[in-house]
Length: 253
Image (cartoon, rainbow, N blue to C red; front, side, top):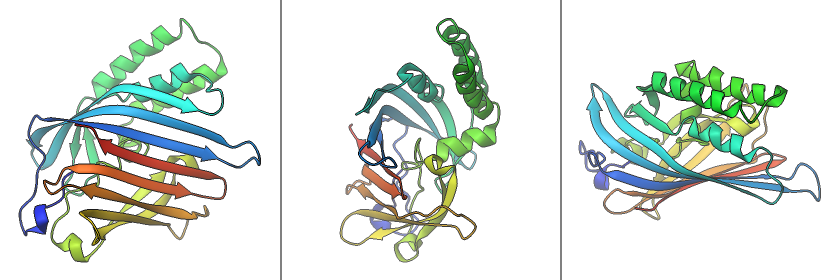
């Protein structure tokens, strides 16, 4: 999402109406909990984001996931199901607040219908406890808009892109929000986004909340814009005692 051009007061660089913005989202997870058996997995998503205008106080976007690739240094079990998990949320019409949070899914009923039909197709090839658990997890998320929003706002999905329109006060005071780390049992951190004075963009930092037991060794990243307020690159690295996670996005046209 765009920053405020040169931070001129009251001027928001709103996304261009009906223009398709193509991004590549990448999540790389490195599990080093077992010595000498490091497991690396990379999920790459090609996504088209189109700004449709405002609906009341919300900014409306169409979000289409066109391709998913999964790479690993180990055999990926049930790769097809992992992709179907992502494609279950592959066509979205969402409403976004000025803070950057996704607060509305306008096509949730259509998503539920598509997933129901996909389940029936998958059951022709899959069965058993693990498959039922997989299906139920996605179904439980989709039947509840609050859970769907929680998932979509995570950095595993679109939290790195939908981080808000920045205004003049954000130059001096960090924009703060809560963010969940799904790989760490949904542990919540207090995330701060502040101006990076060295280049056109913002730095990201985070700390666990006082009531969280999870120890986060690293939580840092950046958002880079060009002079036309196009988000070019985003990056966030998270690490605890056993897992390193790198979320990134890059604008491809």
